[in-house]
Amino acid sequence: MRSEKTARKSYPAGTQAGRISGGFSAEERAAMKERAQELKAQSRRGARSKKDGESEVLEKIAEMPEPDRQMALRIHEIVKAGAPALSPRTWYGMPAYALDDKVVCFFQGAAKFKARYATFGFNDVAHLDEGDMWPTSFALKELTPAVEERIAALVRRAVS
Image (cartoon, rainbow, N blue to C red; front, side, top):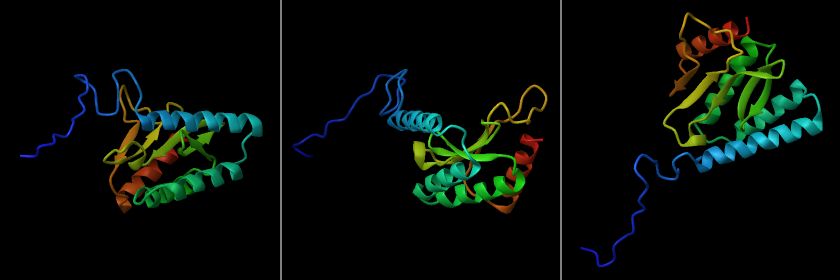
């Protein structure tokens, strides 16, 4: 038995390590700061051009660790090919694709929030309505040809 005990942090019941009940995690606070910077830059710059947005998205993708980087790059290619009307931009520091300055879909790497999977999601402006209930985000572990085709079909449908 060790003579020196290691101190264990205890958290209130119902909270996760690093998160206080009702508060935001460090990763969530960082994402909100990135969003505030995006809005500030957008207001200084005026109307965002597709070229500016694309370079920002590619910079953010380049900063991602593997395998998020390859997944985000492939999704970027799929979205550009399937819905050329969408403008790439960053949204909470992640790649997103907008129509008339409203984000339609977005990618969120697993490493960003220390999750076990990446996410590809859609906002309410996407035309994916299907009855009284439909999925708005998808967990991604790997981009297989079948998954890529499903993403392409969803993106095309979202802007139809």
